[in-house]
Image (cartoon, rainbow, N blue to C red; front, side, top):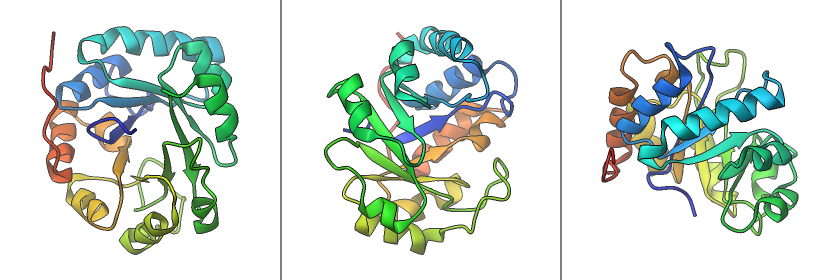
Length: 213
């Protein structure tokens, strides 16, 4: 089952204004409850250490914390799940991480979406839905029509990724997306809490209860 709200914040410390953990905390204050560490350029040990730092920094909000990368690394970090690259083996991830883990997979074609492993995957990401400044050169953009096609054939929930903003969040929802994934707009935001809250409002979800404990 996807986290509630089903809005995923993907990290990129090279885009973050200041400390990555502080950006994550501010996003959580704005309603974020699902974060995935995506810092693939770092050595495994540094990713594990950074993951532990994020876990401690955001503990008051109790978000689901996953990791983009190999299943073995997610397991070593004690992550709540893993997001696999295209071609990743969802069955192996599920076997290692267990039934309660979140297991996702990057998808870029309709054939891949249709073949998604219903037994092992919680979701797939469809991208790029819109062109994005975070990853220029990726494309062509699917647009809402392409996203709708992915949602229609996928046996698992589809998360819209790339170029997501408050202005297009509702359009993604209306064509069948089960959630959104965002990176650059929150990482670069002067006020990550306000940016995430605006995305949440546009999606149509209420902010989670109990912001701090």
